[in-house]
Image: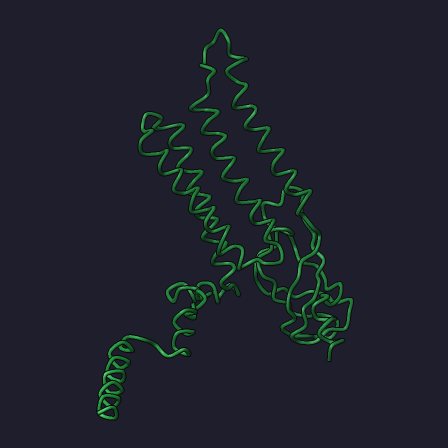
Length: 259
């Protein structure tokens, strides 16, 4: 009887284990379930715009910067329309300005950070400066505590003059802190003492992306990362000019030493 009872007990134990184990995952599967693999976001230009960027020798970083520039332009246009044409439409324009500002901050914290790792602080400061300029003008011209009157016109001019001074100081400080007379590029072709270099967009040197035929003061070959001298105009509205290859970048030199 003891043997029969033990067999019955064993049978119920097995049935119980089978029932209770339903829904359980093996240890390996548990580890996989706990740590799902998150695919990194694609860093590609949308298909419909790819031809446009390829013709200009531009890529995903330039696409991200274009989005930021268009958003900044939209922010300034919305601010001007609100201040000059539709000052009464506060309910429409203040939320719109907030949304555009929030999107710029999002771009700076995510996509601009991934696109321009080396000079990210400069791009972050540029976006913050543009957002600040838009809001300072809105507050100075539309929500200033000083009311405009001919009798006290000198007081009424203080807010707009202060906003203009802020813009001048901000751009001067940005240029002094982040501006430089060189940029980096990749050698695409070598032609004797000259080389064709691909340069990406560079806000610090104010260089546009593209292919540049320049002189080379150093011996380089195709695929090398190089440092290039840049001629920056006083105002910089048309962008700087890439002049010559000064030498190989540190990254290229370090790779050569490791080999």
